[in-house]
Image: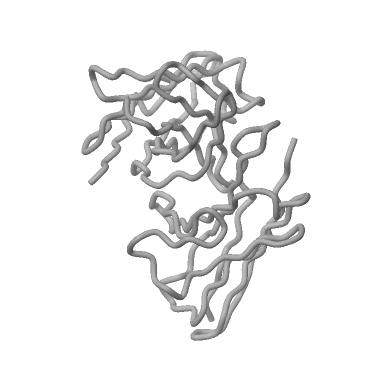
Length: 107
Length: 126
């Protein structure tokens, strides 16, 4: 099976950059997607195929993927960015895999 | 605009079957996309249940494969999920979503979920 490892929580000061990591064996060879989920709401796709931003997602959301770690970066974090964030990949042995999720707190 | 709406009984007894339906509007469910089910148990993260493509290609979470059936109804523009022999561990919010994927010959790749329903709570309790 293929496992994705995310930190349980990340804190960031208002207006600073938040970085949420997603670790996986040779993840650089996989396409990584990121979702934002606020309490009581459905997940929202914020980054797809490592670095692409869907229409309507602010430019402060960006993604990167190299080595064994993919990273979601939120530049200039805002209070409204507080949410759970999940990474997701497709793997030939287990098909769709989600990371455990990271709770982002904006201080 | 693609819209997905889940529906189901809400409460199911242990050992029984949880049956959910997802109505798709604004797009044909028999188009060149996959359609998937994902769940979120209380206090836990997202868990992929399975995905289906028109023509019958199905992909199931190995840990749930023996208990789930996912199907597409093109005439109703909907997809459905049946989860057998449920226990309290199956209590979760269940989401349906459209999934982007591609096939190259016989090899298919499932990518990201771009549209999601609002979710429906499925509770297993006697």
